[in-house]
Length: 311
Image 1: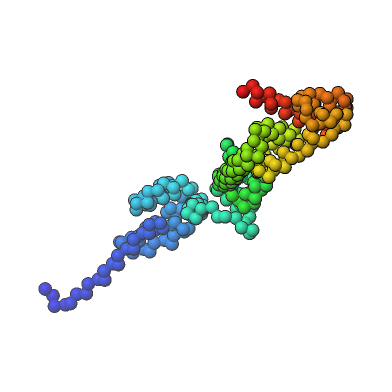
Image 2: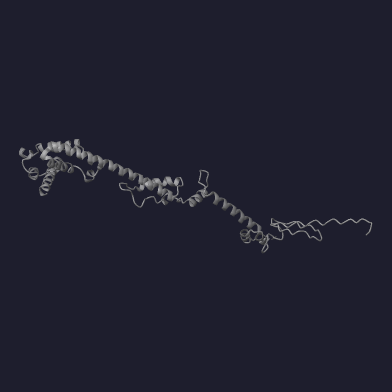
């Protein structure tokens, strides 16, 4: 062993590891030559003259990024890869946020994009609003539906939501109509009972004849659609109205008529005979509104009496 001290040579520094994406090879352990400066974002051994080398993304797969590697392998150069990444980030952001409701500042493309995503028609005519079955008593109006469609489209309401919303509205109208009918029918029933009790006592044995005559008197002066009006039906069942109709009919019956003797006007003949006498004495009877109504009243009364006799 020599007494002369020996100095160990400095240890060679460890070579830096190559980056995952840069792909920079470590410097030679033997020579210590520094690595060449990488070009581009992915290093010169990955991108040569702007083109990726075949199999360049295998390092991603090895690191466990299987889907990223498969997607990246389809890019031929850096520009294509970055465009793919940028599109993917934008798509993921939209997917997470969802369609954004348009504002006054929204562009035409943004509005169209929202409408497509939310199911909004491109124009008001695209809404199908009429329900398959309308509630009883509710009538459909194409003009009103067009006005609703304009409002729905203006506020970007999806087609399905608009149809359900209007259907619910029509259902509410139907319920109101039904409730109104039930109320009126209840009033008619109450008035009819009150009238029957009042006039059976007042008219005695004449009750049925006078009631039928009053009905005929009203029917000859009103149209069928007017007779079907529930509000009018309720009014005609009220005791006060029944009395007014009876007095009006009897006043017309007892009044002298042109060309008819007093014995006829007092009802000494049957209703049909009275009608015939009026027609004979007045060849143009149907041109006179009063005579015409009187003749129709008499024939209606004759028919009502014959119907009762046949029972």
